[in-house]
Image (cartoon, rainbow, N blue to C red; front, side, top):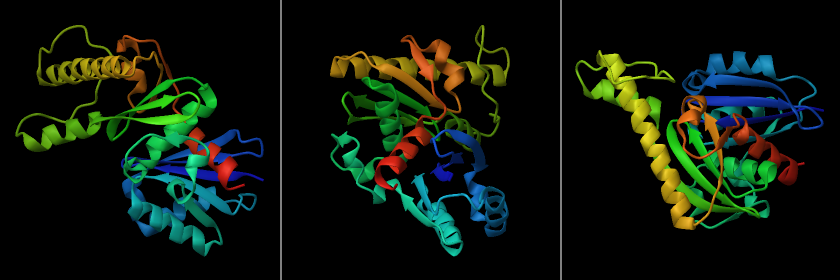
Length: 252
């Protein structure tokens, strides 16, 4: 028996297949916008669905419209889909926030993934459409976090709002300030986000008087690891690990 779970993000959707020992055997990354196309969605999912897949599927989703399209497709194939907020995740992790419904499912999955797999006070920095910072305290308390603008979204918005500033691909290393427009933009984003990240980490540590294990995930994790003043690790699967743990504890 194998298990299918997914993380539907604003930019990317990740589908992962786990074996009977709950080890990832295959992952698929899809541009979320493409799943709006019914023909693409059907053709793509046909490649993934096999006879040995458990009929229960769990998603973390921050895009309700796409989740409902996936749910509708899988229902026709006799699968049952759940979204993590349909379940009582408080059985796994306590939450100290004013309204859990306002916390993104991806952030809750990150919190559960870090709590279960690292068992330490953790700060998860997720470089997604937004850049999020989530605080998890041992033993198993989600304590809130910070949301900052995402890098790619900021690059796109700057391009849309200006006549001459181009879209560019952020480079990991820069030795000096720019000698042309793209170099100047790269310096601004790399150095600017370096300052933003380190300042937020500093503020969180000072506010809660704690020294967190810093876990980086998302597309730009490798870009910023060397610039973070505190020791950090990269775990690109932390979200899907959290979804998997919810599946194991609340669905099986």
